[in-house]
Image: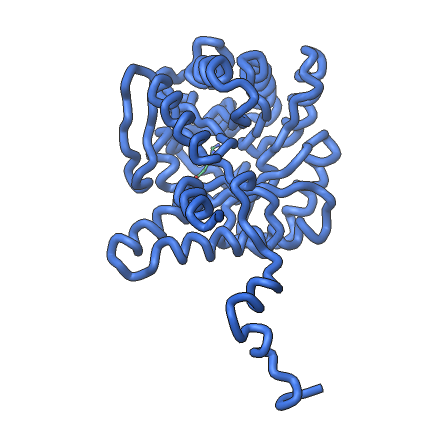
Length: 328
Ligand code: PBG
């Protein structure tokens, strides 16, 4: 049947009809707020390139978590901003390191009301800025996963609900799973960043945690965005090793990848709407080139439409405030 008998616009004719056939929605429970935690007391430093996102000391982080819960935001992912750094990132394996300390306090105060996802990587804790241990000028895979597993145990002991390794080393999920199980943490899920491209969209994040490599780049471990198939083996490998859900990042320029993972694998997907994606929106909004809230909702919806079950986003609060207003 063709025009004029068929008129597709009939189903867009008014708001009720349009809403009736919507099949993409954003829920508060889909959103995960990143938090950057630093040493000190009463610290709240706005991050260059990440307007309205802050490095927070633990006391301020606790206040921030209360605000999130009041809004109905219940999921957070934590990143350490560590002044103490060393050759291999060993400092992150200590209970005196910033994130284990923060998790203990968060869990003491909020218990299971907040889902605490702990990012696991060495790059905030190495003095050279790479995600792992350097041997002969290269990031050594097998030594690195040893420290990642130790860091994961420390985080689990501190009370983390989920372990999220973001390093892109081979075999880390398997080793972390084995070590967690040995210590009695078989219930703690692992959400690896299974698909993580070597991307310029991470720029503002790297200002936030001061992890820019002093030498070289991350292309020998993060994925090449000009390769359209490699992600399949990365996901397969992580699932075989025990991943419970997968994180894909960046998100906005990689919606095709999110879609393909959705179609090919039966696994929950978390999209990471990364720092550079956020800063582009903020910069354009500041110049009044775009309608900020409308653009944010369109971007987040596109990630859900592509197949993401949940989204890590610096826009989480703005989205939740909008949902609270429209929730009658
Ligand atoms: C590091 C890590 C990165 C991000 C999260 N964990 C990027 C990197 O420096 O390689 C990026 C997140 C963002 O840009 O918002 N392991």
